[in-house]
Length: 82
Image: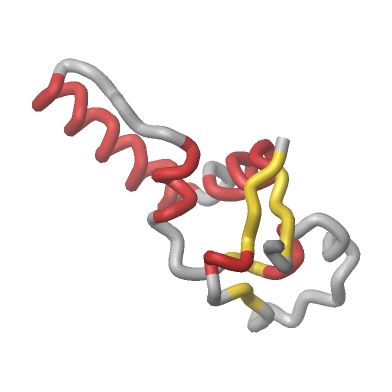
């Protein structure tokens, strides 16, 4: 059983809330469109690109007193849920 649960919508809201991430993914998607004429990318692939996530994103940790240094580093411990 996974230790943490992360709502898919919350993950997407978070990853696309930062202008640097929006720019990165925008460039990547445009590159895919130019080279492959389509974007074929799953939420799981987007998740798998991460090496860490802030703990406050996890279900049950929303009110966590976040110090800016509390992350989940073992991505295998996180389950994406609806």
